[in-house]
Length: 336
Image (cartoon, rainbow, N blue to C red; front, side):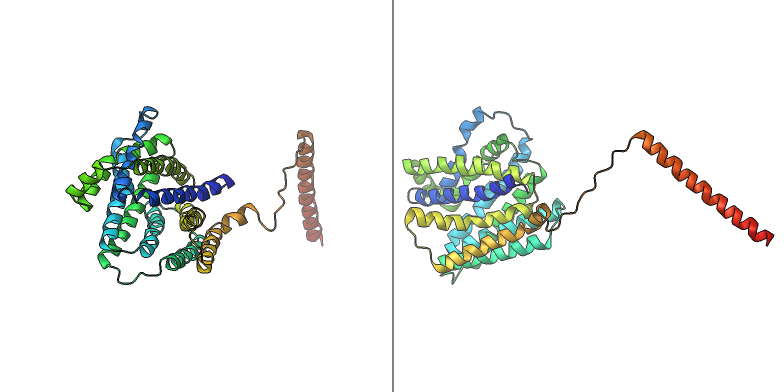
């Protein structure tokens, strides 16, 4: 990965962290399911700029079904079943593992031991951070846990499909991927909240909730999604996805700065472990770019044609003289 790609890998989780802060504000005014629907609706005006899709509509629908719709649907099932915020935050991060696994199985991407070790260390830090922030994870429902894991699997499938279809490197891909998923996201509130409550919530939308959904749609879904998916077309999933583990670190820092939440020693330590894990995943590329011992490359000597001819002639004469000497030795041996 280049320095630019590394910066994008760090910057996108920061944008997603700001989106989570905005969503936290929005959830005081609208439900999370309507928010997820409105964030895609806010992308519709961009169709005037990107009116022509660059891929078949069927591909947008298939990738968007897993990437947007099913992912959010099963997260909703898990939260509705009673999974706490701490455990759910950690389980959602398993989408990274499933993304790497599916890219390895389907796209035949290479996996190195150093990157796997770094990811394991970062996951340990993520687990410790969620435990430090949300210590009460007892009596969690089994079906809720399974639902969130299924949502992570859907995310991994969607991510792999986007890489396979080479979608996301253009802004038009992100716009059409969002717009094509709107009908699926509109159904989710009616499934999880019930028709009566969903209709009531749609009829009583607040201005703050709408503004927050616009921010999440344009900044997190379109801009950050464009940067992330364009990066996915340039690097392997195992090089890219560990940066997602920086998301809880940025979220904790922004919460402390904006809402005055106190950072404990265990949270700071856990964040340091996550940063260490992400750094370990980059060790292999750092050693490749900055080796300890640089081998000197010998430049090919620029020899004139005349010198080359003289060298060839000299080598030929040496070979002839060697043959003559060997024949002379044989004659003397016979005479004796």
